[in-house]
Image (cartoon, rainbow, N blue to C red; front, side, top):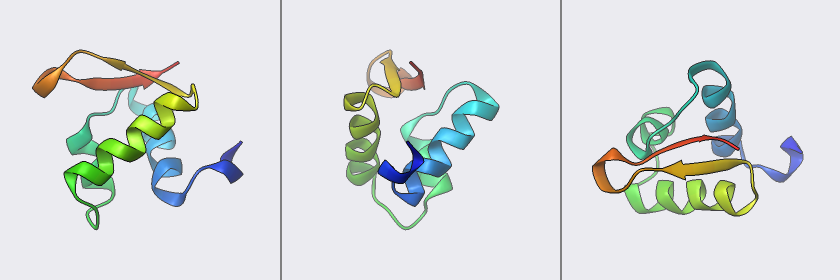
Length: 66
């Protein structure tokens, strides 16, 4: 499965395993080279793959393992 994920997504999955949730801001802190919109798109890709789920909206949005 990890072969299907890019390095940034792999970091996010490892972070989720350790912390139980991740926000867009935390994703960008793990990957400072990307912008907010790119982080959103990559997190959405993980949701679309069924690996994580979105909880909350707006500033309270965070992602958890599915």
